[in-house]
Length: 246
Image (cartoon, rainbow, N blue to C red):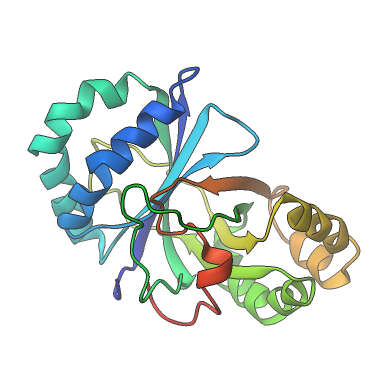
């Protein structure tokens, strides 16, 4: 999983009651077929605050490889077989951020749980921070140098950090959110109570408040529940400091 420098954070809005059906498609073959084409998968995960939301991460070595791998999948037999069933679950699939890591996930040694495996589950968060494009790199450095140590003191396990990938979308059949500039960080918590305690404590930390005031808008925090075969399931117990490349 080394060498992946382009990530997609994909968020779907689903038709009522369709989340389990889409999860079954992913875990029954969609995921493995994409991994077989050279993509990396993180997630999928449900949204704890919106049962109609479904998200996942997909990663590639670079933008050129992304275009070739996506063409191979979406023109291939697995997608052709299940395309209508998958699309029938969705109201919107265009909420996609192209990202590149400034602090990648440490996924070495981890593999997707096999079907039926009882893997530990925790709570993940993805915090999306709209930020000025001219200040994005500095904000990322400031987060890692100043904010992250405070978060860790508060008991937060920061798993990964990303900024917008500014390259042109090399697979226009799948739209992405263009013209936006964001910093995104992922964290894991033992449970929802631990995450709520962090949220309350962070508002009293001057370093966190000062960093947040440099953003263009209030950050959006997604509370995510990894699905049974998600690579990120059990991240709080299996992933330590993310200092190696995913």
